[in-house]
Image 1 (tube, rainbow over the protein chains, first blue to last red):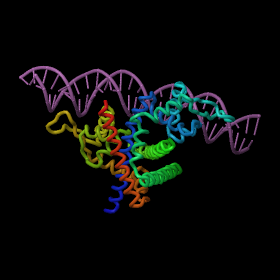
Image 2 (image 1 turned 90 degrees about the vertical axis):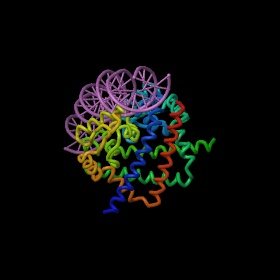
Image 3 (image 1 turned 45 degrees about the vertical axis):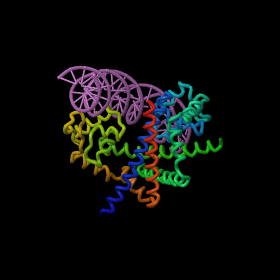
Image 4 (image 1 turned 90 degrees about the horizontal axis):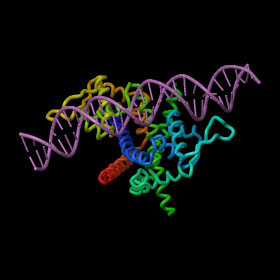
Amino acid sequence: MIQQDEKFLKSAQLLRSFSGIHRNMLRFVQKTAADHGLSMPQYTILMTLARTTEMTQKKIGKKTMLPKSTLSQAVDGLVRDGLINREQVEGNRRETLLSLSPLGAELIEKIHQHEGGVHQVFQEITESLSEEQYEKLLEAHQHINEKLTNKQQEERHKC
Amino acid sequence: MIQQDEKFLKSAQLLRSFSGIHRNMLRFVQKTAADHGLSMPQYTILMTLARTTEMTQKKIGKKTMLPKSTLSQAVDGLVRDGLINREQVEGNRRETLLSLSPLGAELIEKIHQHEGGVHQVFQEITESLSEEQYEKLLEAHQHINEKLTNKQQEERHKC
DNA sequence: AACGAACAGTTCCGAAATGAACAGTTTAAT
DNA sequence: ATTAAACTGTTCATTTCGGAACTGTTCGTT
């Protein structure tokens, strides 16, 4: 029974460490987003597009887990601001393909370089970790993320 | 220059791993909160009170980083539901002391034991990590959190 | 083909979260 | 002792977000 408690305390501490980091990260992100005239969903979408430059809206929905109404509206704004393009996907008139515009790419670059933004701060943080620490950290995170997604699917299947 | 890119990619990957885990965690948390009739701020407050059973509203604000208007309203609801008590702090009529009621403590216990909730899932996750992995992970997180709060204070001082 | 079911995305409306203005309290300086 | 400045928390107006209902598309079944 005491062992049970111990286990619980350990997991609770881990949970707290994740929440804490997230809260602290969020501050930076919100500021960065606001400074560049983006809502949080918009920021999320833009960052998701950053790596691949184009992706269908459906896929972005899966990746970001944003509700589709939120997604739709956020995309609207981004298109209006000329940051991304929205076009019909070839041979499938249901899905829409979203792609970064040059302006969007430029904004992303600006955000990445933004002094005091999350990206810069995280670069410093990464540098302050030893190679081994970094590897182990990433590995553990990957493991955790897999577990989480598995559990999610289990829950999904129950219903 | 190529090294610069490398560094950036590393930090970006770390950032993504944090965001990903958070998104996956959030799903569980939102469900748990909704299942127990709590808004997200209310859930956050309750979980913050869980360990210490009482804390001033000001301190909760600091810990959770919730805007004070949000905090005030969320607390209102919790008091209305009889989950926490709100009383004047001795010798200082500005601050209010929030404390868990028996009902609140009961609810927390229920949430902790909630099958398929974050807490249970995280307990499984923790068990699946080796002792060393767990230690290193927590250590790294602590390090990162410190860096983040330091940076935050730096930014604060600039303004 | 024709129909129904699943799907991608949009629209709309109610609910939740936030910022700004506010009221009351404490602290410090004159 | 008085007043101003900083603070804790509340209220209210506004904005943002998300769920439900909807439109149009695709796929599978008959």
